[in-house]
Amino acid sequence: MKLKSTNILLVSILIFLAAASRVVFSQAHLYNLAPIGALGLFSGAVLKDKRSAFLLPLLAQFAADLYFQFFTNTPGFYDISQFFTYGGLAVATLIGFGMNDIKPLKVLGYALGASTAFFLLSNFGFWLHGWNGYTFGGLSKTYIDAIPFYKNTMIGDLVGSVILFGVYALMQKANSANTQEAKA
Image (cartoon, rainbow, N blue to C red; front, side, top):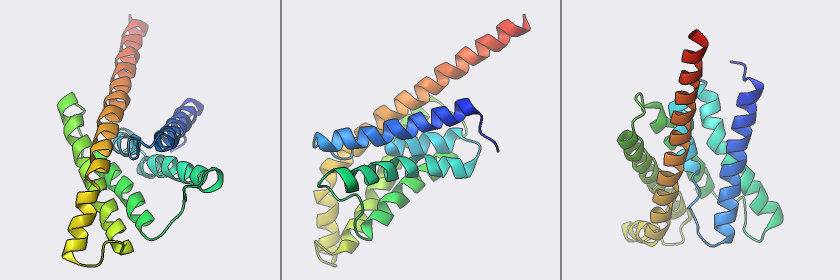
């Protein structure tokens, strides 16, 4: 599928905004508030090209990781747990594939599902790092310690989903109205 220049511009803007939000929120010590999971959910639900749907959130995450690595004291690239973080974003995109009918309550439910999947997967990767030990107690501590991050992930994904899907619905409505005018 060839992307039109307007679609390439839109995709580029979405990647930039998601990466920038991750950097800005991180610098403000509001970790995990960035709507990158929402971007994965949105791309999975809306983009017809499945490869592009996966690439959109992963490139946004990667762009922010590059910024952290080269321009801050925060490491952008770290251990094995990073693969689970990227995997969590891929799962958010997979969840978006299942959203056949885009309705407001459905978007909120799917956003909560994407946030929860990301929380479970990314923190399992953190547990594999071994900082809390390789026991059930260590696994439990990892998830308990991550609850504040989960709250921020949910907020970021819910707000991001409302914005992304809301703007998308408005654009479709405007496009439909323009099509009707053209036929008249």
